[in-house]
Image (cartoon, rainbow, N blue to C red; front, side, top):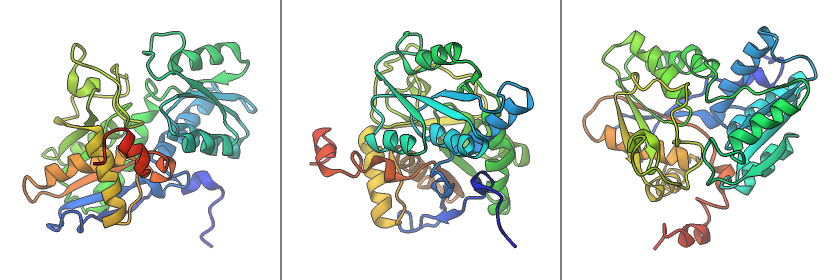
Length: 316
């Protein structure tokens, strides 16, 4: 019988889909990560970080998981927490959609909203608030996806090998959005270990440190879950061959386009990644695999809402 023991065992082995209506040449392939049980790629790192914490004795039975998140990592941790009996607390920046806040609460997560505009060193930032809660709560553990090496290792062990096997080693380019950098670092390292000529391309929102640099014009943007205003320890910039900057307008427009042409409902970060990947796919006929990280169901009040899009100047 093909019966899984729990929902955690259903994480991974997501399909590749050719985006041939978007790009008829046929060399643009999407890795559909919203097929994970909680709807995003972040479940891969959630189980990996908790596995390691349990192995190292950092998280005891009945303990508390505390994490700063834009939503998806929190859902992944909530899945693991539900199955293994942990309390989960997430600090979330206020730009995160109401749907994602409600989704976290539906899983039993205690959600604490913090101002988006505060940098990581500010005491009221979602990073600092999570750290404070961890220190003040008995039996609490913070996985901290921005500094936990189990993050990129999860993608080295799962995402990279899946792409390699699913394409029979014919993949030429990997495109992924860069937030913590875990996906592109881990999957990129694995793919380059198999084929040195593979190009690794980071998609980045306009205003992020990855394309602006530490001394550049780093500013707020509306796409959630990608880009940063600091360099996380989980990103290895040496793995990434180049970045492509994508605006909010381009990201949300592509997300809407994917739903209407390919039947794929993804968020702004997925639209951003596909926009960058389409630009690469148009350069030549190499096989381009793009990671589509999450579902668009968490963004119905934003990217897929005409009034919100008009209010931001993204619809004429």
